[in-house]
Image (cartoon, rainbow, N blue to C red):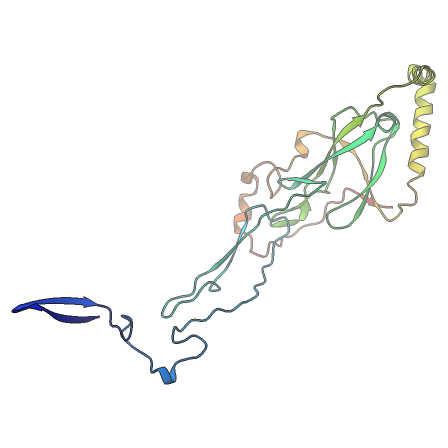
Length: 262
């Protein structure tokens, strides 16, 4: 700082204190001949730096990862931190609910009555062949579970949530008299039910070319299948011991297998 005396008139003076014009109030100045060309004496320069952040499997939306000391720097002060916040992107097929994945699947009335067999591609690229129990009738908006096909539990990556499928049935807009009679005959007795099951078997036989797909048998959904918490189960209180886990998220235990390789 510098104090300046100014004469306003005979016997009248004004005193002003302000930053030094030469150093800008910093208390020191740099010889222009020795000034850094990159920062022009500001002791700072902009640069781009690539940071690598390892995201844990099953990390929930909003999870934060801090890179200490990687923020902006200023002279004579400690560098700040870079905080990375996870923001999930929407998927065209799956919706995440905690550690579970939810999807809707439209099927025909024939599939609902005689059985379904279809293949979907999972988030990790695996091909999953999904089919229901022979003879099982699927009702509109009913829920079914594919065990262990959800997201990995956060900090417990040796376990997975479930894939929950809600079936939407596409009904025909109209049927002719002949088809109506055939349906009545097929659905009125045991012989018709056996015939319907046979048709379902033929439909399943058409899928034999998907031998590389993992087979998952649908199970009727129940509330204990839910894993609405990203660490599994329906609430964080089920995993109080997780607070003591290491940051790498590795645990101990065996993988639960709910599907078989065909």
